Length: 252
Ligand SMILES: Nc1ncnc2c1ncn2[C@@H]1O[C@H](COP(=O)(O)OP(=O)(O)OP(=O)(O)O)[C@@H](O)[C@H]1O
Image (cartoon, rainbow, N blue to C red; front, side, top):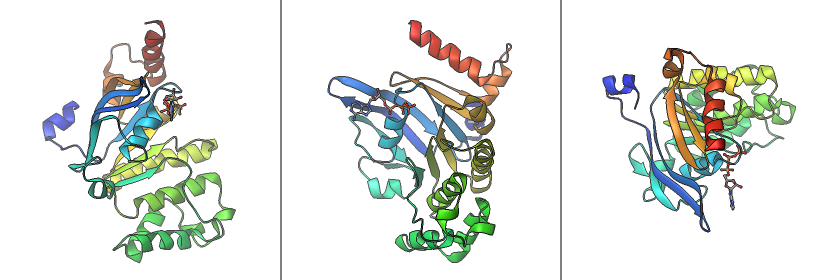
């Protein structure tokens, strides 16, 4: 827990405890423990194959866990899956969209599957993700960045407490990456959501996130805040810190 959260006694939205995935004799995720707090953006970093996607897939119940647990707003993914998952919005692979329908038709279609989403909520989210001008156009005419933002709108409709995005900037051009960064910051600030995002774009992550966790070989090597990074006397960039951490692991 960082200093601010200790002082204000904010409760975590997500508690990941000793999360482990074993495949045969190998632990590809090994005893990972961390919290996510409301309104923060948590960057989940690590080399290829470190275990980030496996961790995220277990957190949203896409695959089973071998050990440990994840609780969301106090509900366990293991024992109270329905209650836990209703507080989660996630985009793990590409968002599921009907390309021959308009953005608005996609959102209405999705809203019908969840109880109690009024049109006013749809309109509010469309504005939040910056799609108002194009929402009545067919999705097949959208850029990749617009499709990603529509996917995020869909994931936000039911007012989740946490949003989990696995490599949301993959394939986006620089303008799309910047829009995604601004959107993530806005969601955390305006909706008070805890956002967890994985990416290899470290300069981007440094601008987008408040806190970071670095996974190496299935273990959470360290967590630190942006403030920690900036207050170091040698004031390293995120990239320098990350390279130092992963190089130490390579030669250990
Ligand atoms: N079903 C599986 N069977 C065997 N090994 C697996 C399986 N799923 C993942 N792995 C292995 O577990 C390790 C972690 O994979 P994971 O996809 O979680 O890494 P990652 O950190 O998300 O990587 P990247 O940054 O490349 O997306 C890798 O070595 C991968 O090959």
